[in-house]
Amino acid sequence: AELRRDLEGLAGSRAVSDVHEQLLELLGETDTAFRAIATRNAERVECRAGCSDCCRARLSITHVEAALLRRGLATLPDATRAALTASAEDPAREMCPALNDRAEGAQARGPAPPERDASVNDDRGDCQVYAFRPLICRSHGVPLSYPGRVLLVQPERIDVCEKNFRDTPLKSLPRRDILDQVALMQRLAAIEAQHGSEQNLAEGERVPLALVLRSAAQP
Image (cartoon, rainbow, N blue to C red):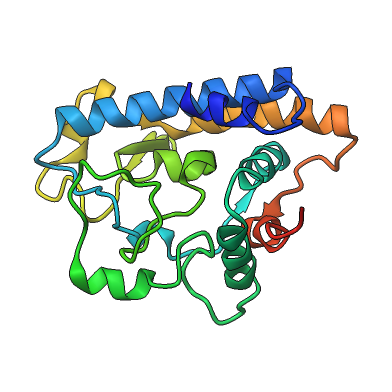
């Protein structure tokens, strides 16, 4: 609901399209499921505002996620958008360019209190596009299920952030505490296919997140 309000509040913006409504629904459901798992397993989950270990990657995203992100970027202050563009253009940067420039130092200080708003841009390495982040950023951290590499021997593989569920056998978890990553990605793929058809985009093509952020400073 908050993400939808942000997008609908854009000055002179178009109405949120049907395909974006579907994406917003998927992202919202993923957020709800993540929070429920984290709440039920509070003593096992170390995810906190300011922790950016899982952001040490150069991500690519779907076109429909990129379109939503561009609309979100338009809501940010000029200075923030300029900083995002500069980060995205830095070839030596190892952190996701959506993080502020002080993220590296934040690791040594540790995470901020969990009640703090994770979308705030401060010196702890927070994501500056948190409200508009893609699906992969919303599901990472809690246990995720994938098809096993050898189906007859291992029909399912469960992965989780190395900081979470450290002393818990993942196979012992109830199903409600495991996100089905395949189902999430299949829903995203269906939404992307509809978006691609409407926009005449190449099937299966992805967009580097840094490429979207490079244009952040443009009006």
